[in-house]
Image (cartoon, rainbow over all chains, first blue to last red):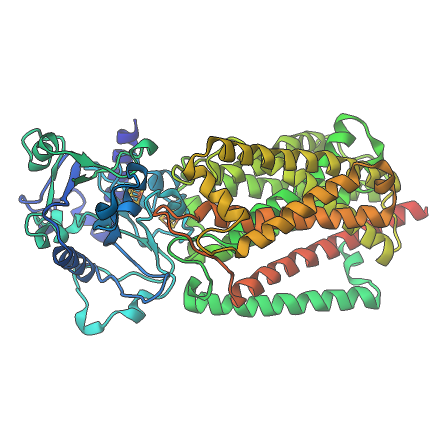
Length: 251
Length: 386
Ligand code: SF4
Ligand code: SF4
């Protein structure tokens, strides 16, 4: 039921959009963005290999993501983070104990988990944050009213709010024009690089990670992510909450 | 009837001017916030709701006071409230308007508020909160105005208004319940994730609302020389006493659950609230004041003699308001966010603009109460003079 409603909303939205852009072309074939080599999946998932990742690689991933998405660097606690480093203990405190001494402070990558049962989507009063059929949780920056209910709803601190006008913290010369800059007063977060997938490319952090981050279709038994999760021991964050996070950490 | 609002003593006008000044300053601060965004507040990535949403939470409670008179009067034929009911209803109107304003000033994109209506989302509690708050506002304006007009013409209220009055009773309960559900349904916010949220909202509401009403009734007695009636105030005092006891009891239940189970995710929030964690102790000072005020108020109010002495009753009501305001208006929201999902501990202290905007909205609320009560009391006087 959830799915069919979502599909209907999507269909209605797409129809309205197509019609408003070019009424005579309504129903015509899709443009270049939906090219044949668009990457598709039934359920996208990410697997982060903590053995292969090191500090330097993590910085590269963060840099690649934040650059690609025009994420401003704001030097205080009203900052924006899509992917960042967080000590093991802070990510997995419910799965830690006192003798994990050295693991405790090791930095890990933290980002939106693209939960299969995302509370952020449930609480949003405008459907500005929504799940795609392939499991990616996305934001509509033009619909968000900035109520920040989704930030209270996310149990992982994955969301950032634009307290400032982010454009004040971005250098015009460094802007990436393929991705919009946001305005003041809306929420944002990692998008699993949905716009890259739609162009047939893998997410920026996956590309930058030199193989330490895997990305694939969890519903495909032959995918890399499925295989590695069967072979090695992995954790997800706060499994008891039932949000069903789709970022897995190989330990 | 509105003409009664523009005929008043010098004191009345001075009071209105003071309120307008406060509103003006608040509005100036809001313009600054519109320009610079919520960066002018002390909110941040981890504590993303603060003073504004906390005031919404507190004031939703105050709006309940009307129903605490409607129930005895319409369901139990308790006539003592007949003179005062209109004041409760008008106070509800003012507090709900304040609530809605606090939602609006908290938004990052207030001009998009209409999106909540354009894309109605039944899965979102905030959507329902908007529905019940606006509905309650409408009910109270309607009931207040129609009954007052009928009284003025010296006829009974029209029969069609009765169903609205009865609907307003569960509706009043719903505004607290839904507001409590904003918090109580969030996974990962252990401080809020408890079935006792809605009951404890109701209890503190039925203590704080009537307490404020009693204080305002005393103010009316002194400044407007109109007595809302001793029996009504005494009945309200009893309601405050019962509700206050329930409110303190529920806090005790929550503390027991956290402290005896010793589940760290639960306990840490209470430790933060009452003792502070990692040196962040600002909030705990206030929380002890809140608890002490609540317990002392209960000890005072338990004795009928104290309730019957106007000044002791007024003092106890002030204590009730201090206690519930700190608990709802400061503690509840911040402690829900701290420790953060990453187990970090922070302090939230609102900034100047945040406080000015908040005061400005309270100014608007008091302005509405003053004007509406002026009209209501004017009509009552007219009737009683004949
Ligand atoms: S991690 Fe947070 S923001 Fe991401 S899908 Fe889950 S609940 Fe939503
Ligand atoms: S801040 Fe935006 S995305 Fe988040 S719940 Fe509110 S409207 Fe939805």
